Length: 187
Image (cartoon, rainbow, N blue to C red; front, side, top):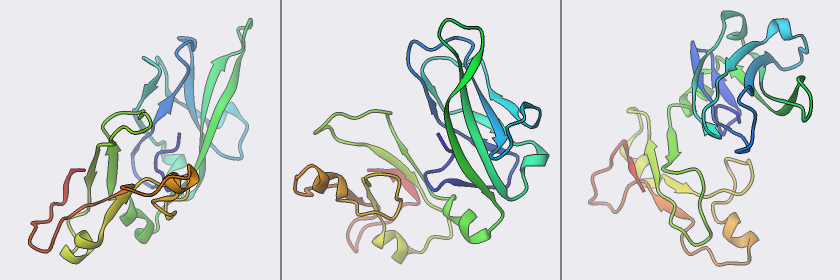
């Protein structure tokens, strides 16, 4: 998948990606990083090989030629059934940017403590916000479950889509007015 839920990264030496594959995948599967509209394998790099397990979060280097603003694509390659040839099984495009306002958004992080959740199960998350975040911003901030890929969507959309009331699809980053707001923690 893409390095950020916002579908962009800042131009820097490395990025962290997230991948997931079927448990019956070939040991020879690999992930390439390529310019999006370039089909030539000569312009791509093998970003991740020797995949262990069926999911991971590796940090990969970005070649100098790919650090300029533009669109890159991660491509997951797997052997075709009954063949020694590799085929693209999944792809995810993302933008490389140098826009400071966009890059500031990426200083926020949110990680689930596990990859999968069952219906009715509590979701535990770790968060971190930039040191420049004001106390007021922290008191107004919420972490929510959002349906689809719209990071600005309605946090209760998942509950509403299932015909359920929104009991608690969101959690406040910082509690009441007397609480000490933390720049990182868990909810």
